[in-house]
Image 1: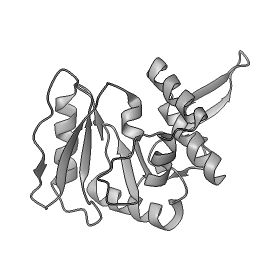
Image 2: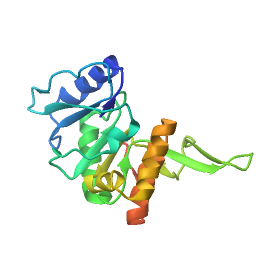
Image 3: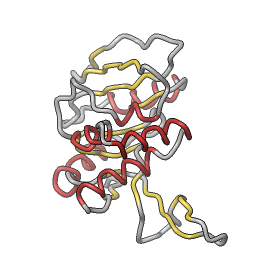
Image 4: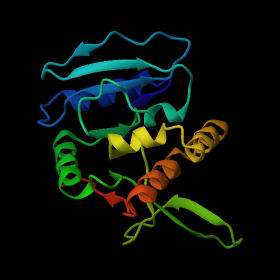
Length: 194
């Protein structure tokens, strides 16, 4: 979970995620992008879920997409500090990832692409009731740790993509969709909960 100067939102999200047991929740890692402030102390929730803060060396959207050497699971839930699945929906989404999405970016929020009136490509929220989508955004999505490893690799294309994300403070969603689809040739999977 990535955060930057939004303590109220972070605390609300942590409260929701930690108030009830979630069987498959192994750990919460918070990517702390507040460079001028030390992160809070790590702790363990009442349901024995460790909450660990990882201080970023720089404020970058790429930090959320870098693998952590301490990850003990194949599944990583990428999220921002202001969005969350409710606990039972989180478990449902994880089980959907296990069953159908291990080779796909699997998440709650879709985006659509298309050519606008000016002839240029657009990236936007999907229309209500749309039956198709182009990508899943990384503010609430499961991904296999292997995709994070490739994203952070020395591959020259990945280095250029990470640089673009840093230069524009944007496009990490497009980048992760590119990585998963390029490596697997499989589309993303939208899972909202039940």
